[in-house]
Length: 282
Length: 313
Image 1: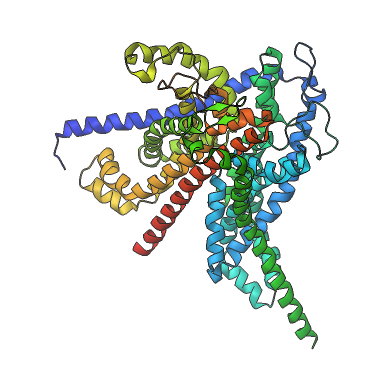
Image 2: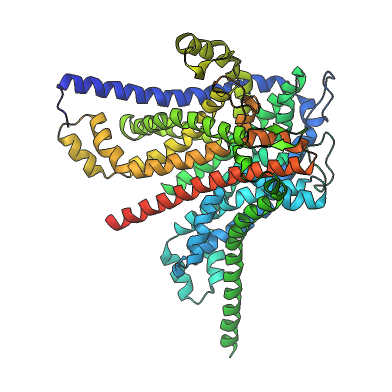
């Protein structure tokens, strides 16, 4: 190590500290900048008809995105109903049958991490090839399946982490009383890890409810009310994409409104989730 | 007798429980395999017609049905490269700030705030990029770059705001929170004794970081960077809004370009001929292979590092 004068070293140290502080400041600035632009543009679009009316053609006042709000809600609920139970079970397998240290557990753990990193647009493409193409039409169910696939590894891995935090002595006490494994898991382990499991699922829902790319190839979009998920289903995120790319100012305005709705929803869910997790950890 | 029957029943339900959970776990493997199979089967038409040349050809003409992936792959690599060049140093600086420099009270506020950036959906980055960031690029940043660095071919062409550079920067904003939070965890794992002995020798914060913390956590940081890389490569919406969608390879970072993900997002629902659709699916397959390789490498790397670390301690 080269020796430098104390003054130089201290000066260099200060410079690095300032650069690091500046980088952190930059992160905060970008976050605030995004939030402020979403809020300031979005609030102009939010009014009563935004929540109650169907989309209007460009130039016609009073259009809303009620159908897309309902569609996003339905698709997300359907995805949650599919993704969360399967993810919970998979996570249970990884955590509770880990004692086998079987190759299968290692393999599943490894590939659920890999699956988490596969781009969501690829998942959409996959669901298109297995559901949309054979059926011959786009559908809300296909959209829900693609979101469920994105949720699955996330829920599985958080479930595993949360269940691993439950003390072994608790399980052993129940097993020693003669309780069967599944009862121990559902009545003891799940109960002890309840808030963690709920939070993990919340974070997974937050993650998929802002997804756009997989829905473009599966749920598509639709300017009318949705009565069946077996048809192209309107949703907020694809609507944002279509409206933002359009040349009409009033459609762009609606896109800002939809962005505000999605951002607030997703951030609320994830802040809520993080708070609960932090409480558990401390 | 009754007790016996009960325990038999419990044994059966336990076996059932085990198989049920295992099959849910295996579902993950099936999906992973299914994604590969689905994309290969559906791109067969294009694979048979264009062969290996698909990856090298920069043709993209739906009318003559001549397709090549070169411009999309190039765009994905370059935009990701820009993102990594910007994001990695900034992320490490942020992680150092949070772990070493800032007081705990400050990092308890700034840390979660930066992590919140990771929760913002990518389409929001796209909206913000197109309507807020692109005008700033066009009016302030690109003209300044052109004025002082205009002799470099990278900065030729009209400053339109959209293009490769803008996409790379927005990707960087998206992966910074991700890389910095993993890096921060790595830094927090450096044993306090090691840091304190360096401080005790009279080292400054930077010297401790440079010679103790970063070397100690180097492998973890590398793993975090690879995970960030895989993320940036597959990012769709943020890029599609601002990259300009043009199938030409230009040396300028200001020119409109495309990436695999943006091509898919823009053209997939318009593709009517089977060969067009098949070529798009093959593009997706190329992206899948790229992210899969990076992701598997990152996971193996982190797994190796963690296991060795456990054995070491």
